[in-house]
Amino acid sequence: MKKIAYIVFILCCYGLFFNCKEKVSTDDNFNDLHDTLIIDKNFTDLHDTIIKIPDGLMIGSTNFDLDIDKDNTIDLSILVVKYYSSMYPWSNYVQISPKNGYQLNYSNYVDTSWYQNPTMPTKIFEYKKVIIPKIFNTRDTIKVEGDFTNDSTKIAYNKNPGGANSQYYGGIYMKAWINIGYKYIALRQRKENVDKVAWIKLKVNSSSVIVLNSCYYIENKEELIIEKQ
Image 1 (cartoon, rainbow, N blue to C red):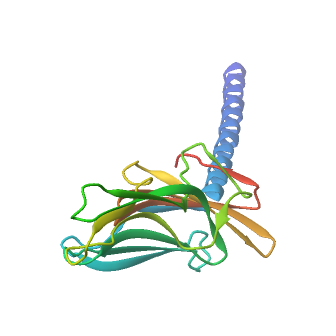
Image 2: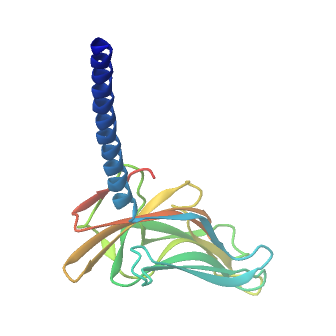
């Protein structure tokens, strides 16, 4: 009988030991989850929001405002404009305007213009250097120091300055972002001694259609590596 009691006692001790060990492991998992939630609170899923003029409309504009850092203040506005006419000059474009102290990381781009008088056999091409939102990929690094602007910047456009009532016709287009899939734009904010670095994942389907996937920001870091979310 004493031997049986001793065996039961040993088994109870082992059970208590493994129960405590499992509880420690569970607590560790909770801490890992807690850390993940702290990181992800700066992430916003935009659910592939499509910004465009409704199908069938040839003329119109629409605006989308985004609060990147969740402080109930607009940090960025996206404007889509579509104006098409077979008789008069027309234009489509997508424009990004940083707000609330945010600035947009940009790169230089050469757009192409062409014109032709219907009575002349050749086209005239002109090239102009402009700035566009810099294209970032997954695993690229956004640095708080760099080329940034707080000006409204077009990410895509297509214009025809002529028309049937004009003595010439032609086109002006910027298509670096069009149909290249999901990429990232980068932003920074320097305000009250707090640096914020952010990205927005998006794709541009045409000169009048843009799709927003997600955005993310961090504070008081010199750089941000774009991770796949």
